[in-house]
Amino acid sequence: MAKRFEGLVRTDERISPSAISRANPTPSDEKCVNEVNCKLLEVINGCGRVYTSHAVVGGMYVLLCAIGASLTEEKHVAMAWKVVQEHVDAILSLTMY
Image (cartoon, rainbow, N blue to C red):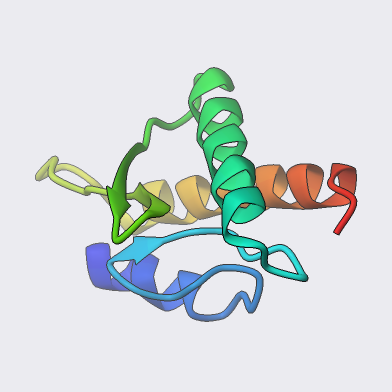
């Protein structure tokens, strides 16, 4: 399921594809990118539909998606991706980059 989610992330050029991901507003001033991703995490978790975590890696604030439940199905992964996309759309439309 984690590979499925990673595959979905790789389809969106606004998000850095990797095991750790983050939205990439343009132009990409590192401080602003970190702030955007912090806000993205807040709104994703605040919606109550999915929960994600974060880490700071090499000064980059990144979002983490861990799929650990054995009952997770592809429909759950697709729903989580839809939530991420909805909030990326909203956050990036509000930022002045």
